[in-house]
Length: 85
Length: 93
Image (tube, rainbow over all chains, first blue to last red):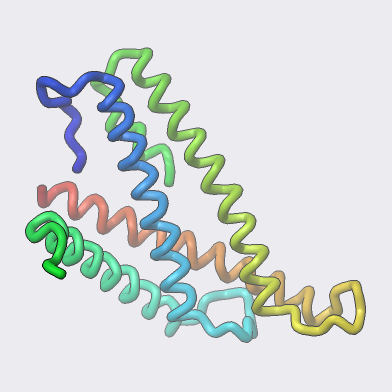
């Protein structure tokens, strides 16, 4: 979704709008990813302020898997559109 | 979210660059404020359960400090991985 050249027919306002929407989407994606992986990987008892090795590995893997799921869903939505009811 | 996004703006005319930069600043500010609020809520929820006093107990304070530091470190790590995955995706397109 990152085209630097606006295709003919899209005016500048639309391009700015699309860029803003894309950026907001990325921020939202990042925030949800961070929240989700924190919930899944970090012990809530907060025994210390550092992340231990297990948590670090978990976070890396969680981010990677979340990203894959994000890609899968993106493909499904762009290919099939709405699922039949 | 960081100024790496500005790297993509090189070819644009000056006024567009300024506008995009202002947009990014606005998004960053909003994101920082949201993060602040959500971090407070998270650490409060995880650390504070006792309402017999109206000031935080020592152990609650310690818990909140660790909670916040942990989340911020986590957030930085996620940011690194996110940027890596983003740049991989960009080169694949």
